[in-house]
Length: 84
Image (cartoon, rainbow, N blue to C red):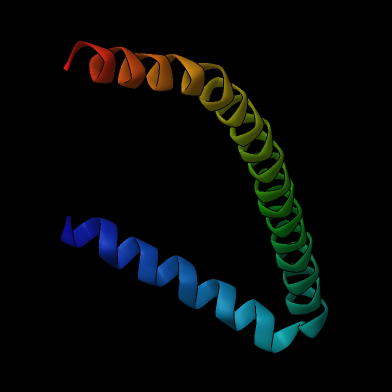
């Protein structure tokens, strides 16, 4: 594990040295990061929009089910009243 950490530090130090000596590489990394972040944001926005649409659909279905069951509940209450 210590060897892996040392290797990672060495690799990162080499990359940092390259960035200091060639800022264009740093800009390239920044552009790649920006593109990935933009893509992640677009994916998150799409997921939120889809979940909102699904929630609205389910809400409508639940409302319809409630409307259908409400008369049955009321009929059961009336039946209990007439038996009392």
